[in-house]
Length: 187
Image (cartoon, helix red, strand yellow):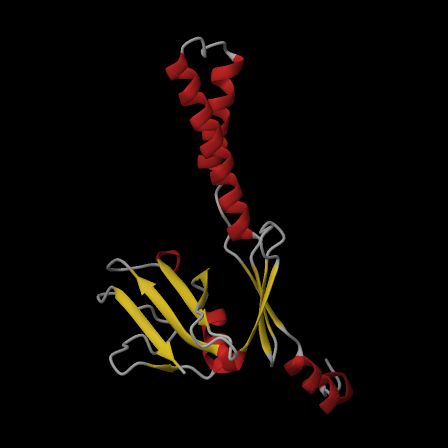
């Protein structure tokens, strides 16, 4: 049985846990489509089927699309969202054109949840977070992310976003089942 000294935390430990950043990662992906397209393209070359232009062009198309599917899945899986008290940091080691984006909570102006079907599951909902830098009021940056109720709740709380008046998606743990559409939260 634990003693009172073992279960009691100091005020410094509690504040350190609250100040620790929240880290979320992208969803797990299935590479079957990309691997099968790539394998089909490579097999056409290795089996000597590319004697005619049409077959060779089809093999190259399958190979290129397979690599693009694999790269797309890697991008989504390796997206990392780090939430601190001051910023939302979006980083991805596979995105060569912008490894890290750092957004302050005051400049996150809107978040949308896009539900495109009846009876959706979590993987059917896409979240779009909009960022407008204070020094560039006409510029809108958007980050698309997979639905994660903990991530959505933390963003809503830290960015101080409120649901629009016609928004029935007020509880982030319960996705609206009969109302497909776009649900908005604004600053």
